[in-house]
Image (cartoon, rainbow, N blue to C red):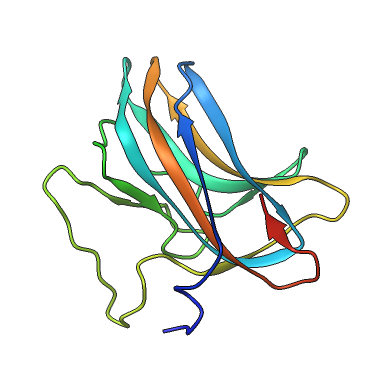
Length: 162
């Protein structure tokens, strides 16, 4: 286990799902420089949709003109996730975000005894505002809320997350 993993600075923000039909992008955190980080969200109000569901949920970076996947944009289905459920980056960027559904309780473990949250690096684009986003597609009117967290370790001079 990495010795610093439990002592990283932490930021959090609560975001409500937008009640529009189609793709939505929730801006979460702004990154400057290069940071090692852990990223996850905890559902605080059940995630609902009046249509066929909330799909294609994923984390990504946005620099104002292009998107870089943090988790695969094929996305996870997050329809009806109850409060207490977790959405997390636990694998490489080509893997879908992990959902830990609190409906029946759950355990999450790794054979290597590491934290279920995946440590990864973000390097901001020079000369642009680089934002961590959570994106999803709603078939109907979406509702619900998620508290997102990022823990980070600055790796370059002046690196930060706000």
